[in-house]
Length: 353
Image 1: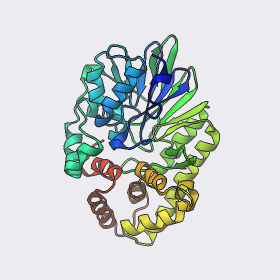
Image 2: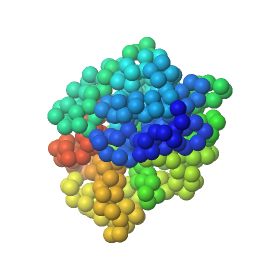
Image 3: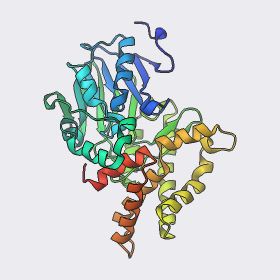
Image 4: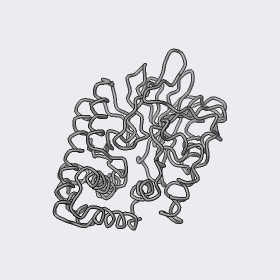
């Protein structure tokens, strides 16, 4: 079916039979993207959340990919905004293999602990933000090691590269035909309206040196284009990856300063936000306030600061040790106003990983 007949606000053709799909996470536009590679063996990269699965299914149908056509689904990592729809999509496309890094495979096969923890953190708001991750049949899961390959047919492939720093179960993917690099969250988040890049440093897996090494690895792959899950394509690869690394360092420096001042979470977040906001056009006085709200929704300030503090507690402990650590995490757990905070904190509080 001709992609020009599809809804332009849901599907964006990116060339070379690659299509961006707005998964409409929690009803919002432009938050989480999935990508269809419409090759001989069609492949979906990222499912979005469980409530997004019907949106993705309808988009795939409009692009001529039916229930028996989808060969592969790949998730860059198993956070619920990227892989929460994996079980539903697997049921909709019974012939598709579900590909994930080996560290995340068990949680797709049996998400019961993950979802029980998420429900404990979210309560009834879980359904709105993420829905329920349904189990993926274990015999359909392909668990990748630190490097791997996804066959797209006709000699085309996605090469996978382990890319921790944001999450220990994270991979990046390079299209052998186009050179596109699917970044997941490892290079942060991108706002296409302004060109801003901001880090994604949630607890418990953020690690400064590991995250920077991943960005360097992405650069060494020499991709032709970056495809951000949050949100969209970027052609200026070198400058964007440089900015990604710079932003990670800035947020770590500012968070370290707030922590050294003994600030509680709310005041530390406020300090970091105040000291970094001039770096982003989305927060300029001339910008639409809705754009700034969207930016913070997909790169939550409290989540970023919390993840960095958690890493600092492990690598640069203070004299008060676990007391400061515990006080921060009690505050974070109670901060349910941000979906990304709740999603990330459950990985710490309930020991999932």
